[in-house]
Amino acid sequence: METDEIKLCKNGHLMTINNTYIRKNGYEECKECHRIYMRRYIKDHPKYRKRKLETQRNSPEISRKSVSKWKLKNRIKDEAHMKIRSAVKNGLIKRGVCEICGSTKTEGHHDDYNKPLEVRWLCKQHHKDEHRKIKLNKS
Image 1: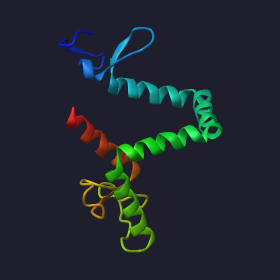
Image 2 (image 1 turned 135 degrees about the horizontal axis):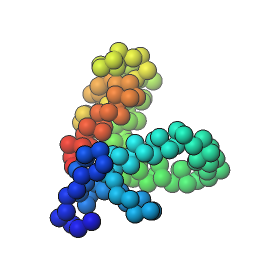
Image 3 (image 1 turned 120 degrees about the vertical axis):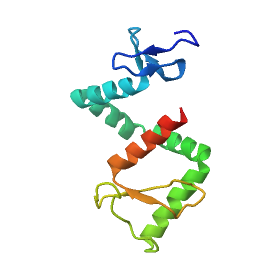
């Protein structure tokens, strides 16, 4: 794919040099379509899922290294996560319901990591969706 070239994937998404994934067989698709493909593949292939879990269990040092690496790169985010976790645990902040669907199983979403105790409570799915929207707006 040329640097200036813009194509459409099979589902009509724009494919630029920054959001194109090329499979081993040379097939090109946008990253969103590739994510969908991989989710479906993992769901349909329990052996793949099992092998991935076994690797994580048998190599905890690899997992620890990647977490440590993330924490070093994202110090402000990590500190905000720790502060909100501690505040909930100590009863300073009460975990709310998802502001979209009302689920009681929620995660805190920081709109601004410099304000660690200001969070929006979202269920896991809506939290993922929120981060996906943020990521799409950045690109």
